[in-house]
Length: 567
Image (cartoon, rainbow, N blue to C red; front, side, top):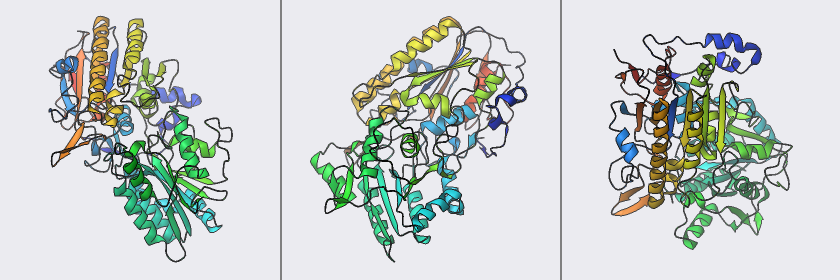
């Protein structure tokens, strides 16, 4: 189970979007109808409760401790199990790695387990492949001509967007290659790791840079800031976040400190409630002069491997016709991502490590078999039910069969409006179910993940209860339409609101490694489904399950369906 898949880019998945090849490829993706299956008029609706894991079932478990009558009833259903949503089950290096929404939706849409960002980068660094690539060679050429190499990215070992050891490997590579001047622009985490753990990463980084600053080398931290207000916006929710980072990293504008560790400690001292992810930006300076602005002739690497929060800063460096914010100046640099964050849009143009090539997604199979579909979420998770679901590809597979809809997220801290857009998403899906034109619908309720990241228990419970209420509304309409509901989650988060050590509670703002629910509620009455007895099932098993519920024989190399037609 959960066999890791590796494929070449020159396969049918890369051809399915080419109109001249579509006829032959679609025929190759056709699936057989299941014997003994009875068609029904209602839809199959997949409901992703983002951030809902099966936790400790005590007061720290925000899912268990909330009023969730709908979910409680569903968990008692005959077709209710728990499945894996972290670690090797979603292509990450080890079962010690928490899952995330990107790899989770990749697995949901792919039907198999593909090696994901962290593992791909680790392998490329360990083999030295990174240092032999064309992007690295171009960076070295900049350095040889006197340019500074800059590294921007999330500084932690959370292993969701980045890993500090990968940064260290790149820095060692610079030293080995004789690069004279390096500047690091760390973004503080406090989300995939402890809420106030920045110094656990900043201080060792400062020490490593000092050790590398010998033999004429000058390696230092130049600027930084908290990830939720500096640089790492996604889905164009707030370009002001990217602008804030641009000012610090590129222009050297912002509050000045003698060192990054001084900046962090000062912010802590000034506001004891300050957490890392919301920390203001800082600029390291000497005699009021920033030590590391980004200038013409420099090289820049955005060292996050995860794509969603790397796209906008990449566009700011690369686009000629850019309208996200006023850049003031755009330095002539060689820019590269750790990976390519959007293959269809070619963002960024240069990258150190090839992204996973995910072929034959469930979306491609559904289109090839003339099954209409609808996908919706609010901005924070819209890319997950589209781009990541479709194997890291933008746009429609077949716009005559598919419809994607985005509900704009509120631009306020999530704990201030924990209900988010659950009601609006529900309204739209109810409308689609009643129209009866789409056979497969998928939606993502973002609340329990986004609010879970705030670590505010009161808000988390409101988020959980808002989703449960929306779920109840939606199920009534699916029932009336004679459809089938599939309820699951891409990873946990709200299921652990805090940790406790020596009687002291600390907010738990990261994803959990808990299993997630998987429930099938059949309102059609047309078929008798039963659990298939799959051991060790994970998110990748759901694509085959969708095929089964739609009356199609799943592809042979997909992870097996969790349910089967009863004998």
